[in-house]
Image (cartoon, rainbow, N blue to C red; front, side, top):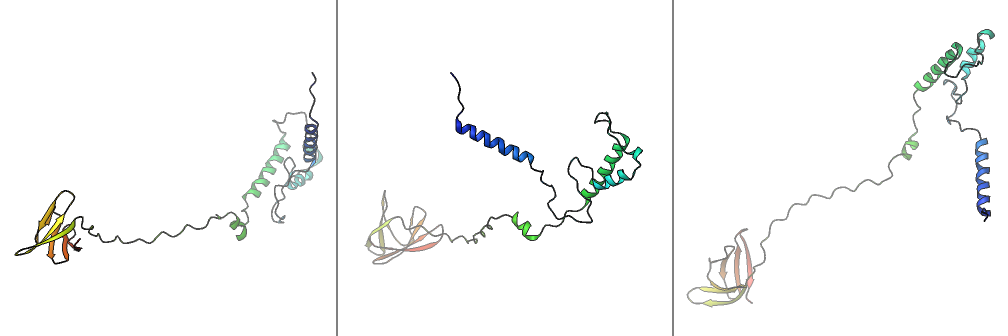
Amino acid sequence: MSARLNPRLGWVLLAVLALAGFLALQPAPDDDLSVARTDRPERSAPGQVPSQVRQERNALPTGQRAQPTSRSASMPTPQQARELTLWAAAWQRRSAEPWPAAPADARWSWASQQPPPPPPPPVQEAAAPMAPAFPYAWVGRYVDDTPRAVIAGPNRTWVLRQGDEIDGQWRVGAVAERQLTVTYLPLNQDQTVALK
């Protein structure tokens, strides 16, 4: 049994390899995309010696220049150590320079794009408490020496005169022919009840 490669997969792999080879041959992107300034020391690519160090090295007589040796990379020659020191000093001068101020439109691009939160709702004053509706029915009137109201509740019926109380919450006021005035005692509020 032989394993066959799917032709489409083979073309995809070939395209990926070609793209990887193309990208490997491209030069490395420059880390400094800003316009070169004359007052700033020249930046060099990683692994290259800065031009200031090259100039100082070339100023030395030929016998004092560092020559490649078979020493290990962890043991630099005195000249290589001096060049590294010069390179580190140039890098330190370059990194000590302040960054240029970003333009206003560049700062805006990093700002939050969310709209501002809505203002808090205005504080409303609490409404004054109101007495509940009269929970009983005024079903009739009884008249003798003083008028009295006949009031029916869910469990009992009362015959009350002006000033009498119901369940310690309501007080009977004026008893007229077709209207009854009651007072809600916890809030001392009056209500008018019509005869049913």
